[in-house]
Image 1 (cartoon, rainbow, N blue to C red):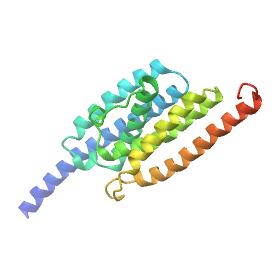
Image 2 (image 1 turned 90 degrees about the vertical axis):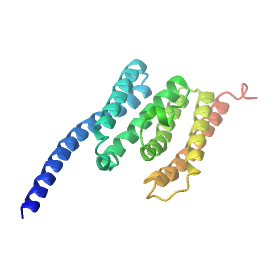
Image 3 (image 1 turned 180 degrees about the vertical axis):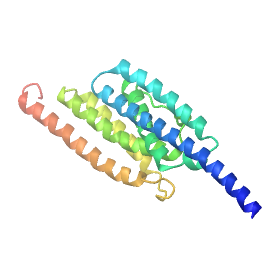
Length: 204
């Protein structure tokens, strides 16, 4: 019975520590999700400097999260962490692609493969929102360039024909992306046709 008592004391101590880590992780992931959402919102509304500042804060949170979870891989690979990291990837990519026209590397992002892919899948939807704004401003060429980017990301994700157990949620995001891309293509074509009707002489 003495062995059982000692083992339960060890178990209780371990779980108490892990629960403390879990609570801290919940707070960090909540803050990371909020920052990531803010970055995307700011980009859509032209708040580049604030978006850049929030991105720097988000990077620091990811580094802190990685450090805390180094000894707790069971928490690191949980849905709670993956969901917030996927939003971070989406925001990071969106900022770099729209502001700097370059894509960050996986090593630069410092996230596991699954949230990396999930974030890229969601990114296509944000680029579409950006395209809609460009079309509202009649920036057709820029909109077509962003459509090409959407298609490139989609084709890249589609090559990864692995089961959902390995890359959960990614296949569904690819299917959604296909519809978004087709809708975006139709929207661009419709806008171009409308402009031709308004300016029949210039379109000749």
